[in-house]
Image 1 (cartoon, rainbow, N blue to C red):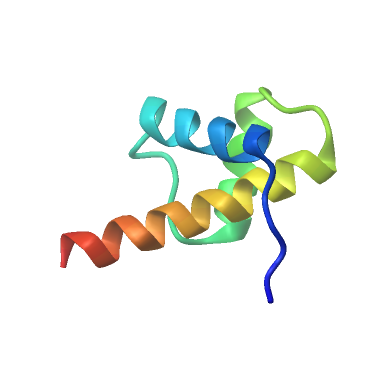
Image 2 (tube, rainbow, N blue to C red):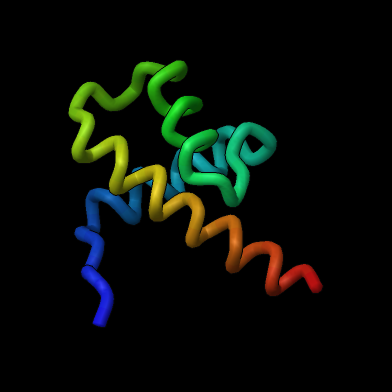
Length: 66
C-alpha cells in the first residue's frame, strides 16, 4: 500500500498545477527544483511531498488526455 497524502499537500499541489501548468512535468527532480525556485515552500520534507504529488497529477492528466 502507498502512503496517504494529507489534505494540505493535495490542495497545495492542485493549486500550484493550476497556477503554473506549463512549469511542472512528470519528472520529480524537475518539479522539486521548480518548487525551490518559486520559493513558496521552505520545508524540504513538504517540498518533496508536493513535488511527488504533482508528478502523480501530471501523469493522471496525461492518461486522461490520451
